[in-house]
Structures are given as structure tokens and as C-alpha cells.
Length: 178
Image (cartoon, rainbow, N blue to C red):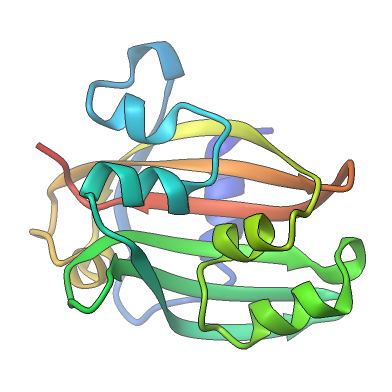
């Protein structure tokens, strides 16, 4: 996988009026600075990682969605529960062929973060970390993550395998951390 090609493929799912990302570069996992390394370089659900780091449950807010054949795609933010404090921006491309109708319906309901749905339904899953990306925020990402345009943050590309099949492609970008 070429991380920058995959990043473009994911962001192209939801074109924005203003550029989402001003600049991006692949960052080796071993060189990812803390606390981003702890937040992104792992094979766990970001839902759980964000909740642990921010000491708060998170809720999903769907900004846009579309269905393409068997794929359900959505652009989201995660915010601390009961607040408008955004902790993550994400784009998801999910192939529903590999999950039950109940999991599909709960994801489409858009009420619970994806990771929490898979955990709650005990879906056999494995998360494959694809790449860490150092990102300079364009105006679109700055707006979504409540950060300064041009400020730096980090994100990751990953694939979730459900029942041994590559079911979910993810772009997950953390708000700037201190």
C-alpha cells in the first residue's frame, strides 16, 4: 500500500469545498512522536483508545454518508460524550458482506461508534495498522477538528478484518495533542 495514494482514495470519498489536508507525509511508526505514537501505533479500536486517553466516553457524529454497492462509507467526528469537544476525525469504508444484518443495522443507525458496535457484538476482528501519516491541516480538517489551519497532527490508515476478511478501511486523524 502506498499510504499517500490510500489517503487520497479515502478523502476522495467525501470531497470538500475547502481542502481537508494541506500537506501529508508518511511517518514510520517507530518515529511517530508521543503522545501520537501511543494513540495511533497499535492494533486496537480507536474508540477505546480515545476514551482511555481523554478519560471520557465518546459519541459519533456523522457528517456525511453514502452507500456504494455493498460498501457503506461515512465521514465522522468523535466527540467527548455530552460535549462538542472533538477528539477525532475519520472516514470509514465498510463492506457489510462480512458482518451480520444486526451489526449492519446498528452501524447504519449512526448512534454508536463503529468500534463499540463491533466490540458489543463480539465480531471476530483484527486491526491491521497500514500507516501513520503526519498531517498539516487544511481549512476543512481545521474546521472539523477545531484546530488552527496549518497546524500539525497525526493520523493513521488501518484495515479491520472481520471474521478473517478485510471488511473496513479507516482513516483516523487525532485532534492535536499535547
